[in-house]
Length: 223
Image (cartoon, rainbow, N blue to C red; front, side, top):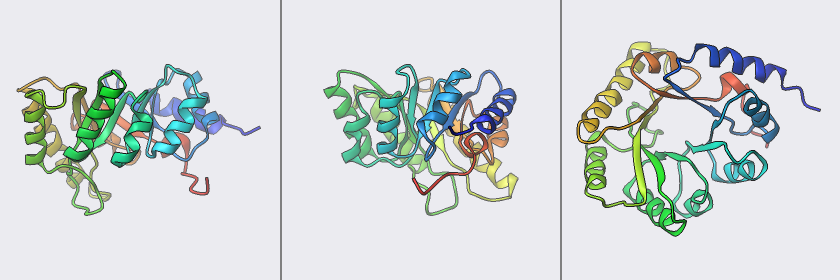
C-alpha cells in the first residue's frame, strides 16, 4: 500500500499558512485518486485537474461532494464530459469555449461557474484573454449573452521567473482588472498563484490559489 504520509504532512503545512479568506484548490494532476482521498479525509473539498480525462476518471472514483475545478486549457469537444458535474472551469480563454460551456450547461439544465483566464505573463506559451477582450466578454455576459454560465471571477498565471517584482506587477494587472469589472457587477474569485508564487499572489489580492507540487510532490508524467 502506498505511503501518503508525506503528502499529508505537506497539506498540513500549506493549509496552515493559507489565510482563511483564501480558497485552496489542491491540484492533483497525475497523482492517484487514493492521494486525493487522503487529503479529502483531512477536510479538503476543492480539487483541481488540468486534463478532462483525468478529471472524469477521478470524479467517478471519489466522494461526490468534492468541488472539481478544471484549471487546464480546455478544448470545445471535451466540455460535454465535465458539464454534468464540474464546479468551476477556471481556464476560459476564448469566446468559443464560453459559448460551448453555455451550450452544454443548457443541456444539463445547470449553470456552470467559470473564471475568465487573462494573459498577464510575458511568456507566449500561456493562454488567456487580453485585458480588452476580457472586458468585452464580461460586458456581453452582463447583457445575458451566456445565460447558463456564471462568470465568477478571473484567473491568471504569472511568468515563470525568479523576479518577484515582475510576478507582483503581473498579478497587480489582474487585480486591477478584477476591481474594474467588479464595479459593474461584483466578482467573487480572483485565482492567482501556484506552488512557487502563491505568497506573492495572496499579497497581491488573490482569494484563490492553485497548489499542486507543494502538496502532492513532483508530478508523475509516466501515468
